[in-house]
Length: 149
Image 1 (cartoon, rainbow, N blue to C red):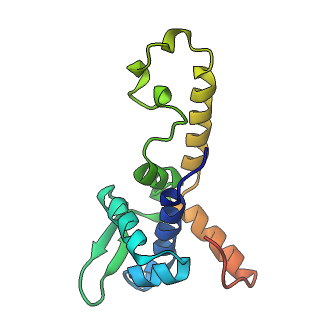
Image 2: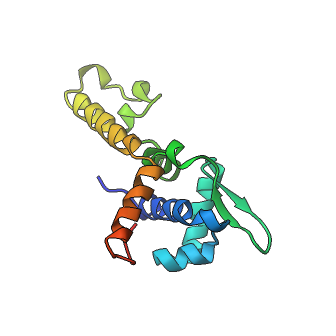
Image 3: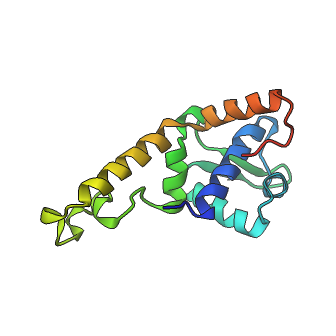
């Protein structure tokens, strides 16, 4: 199972906003340049993140994007769910979808998929943007100006 570019690039974009919003709203152009993501694709991702309430856009000359919550209150899982949908390897273990399969009462593999979903959710929700922001500072402090996010 792989995350699509939506999840990966979206996490890079929102982390870029988190790291750079201290000086004001972060422009889509500056994110695109730093993260090497096309502005058109980035715009689609940012609209989705805005609709999910994770970021806010500010219009005008000094406009751009800012986080809508504190760094510590946005988990990687929040970002992935906003962009990719439910964190579940198969439909039958998605929250609210347990009754969608007629084989659920005798499915041997459902436990595997449920355990995988729970493990993925636990890991993704255990990291906040604050955690990743602190990690990026450590890397930058070691002399890597072009650190990867």
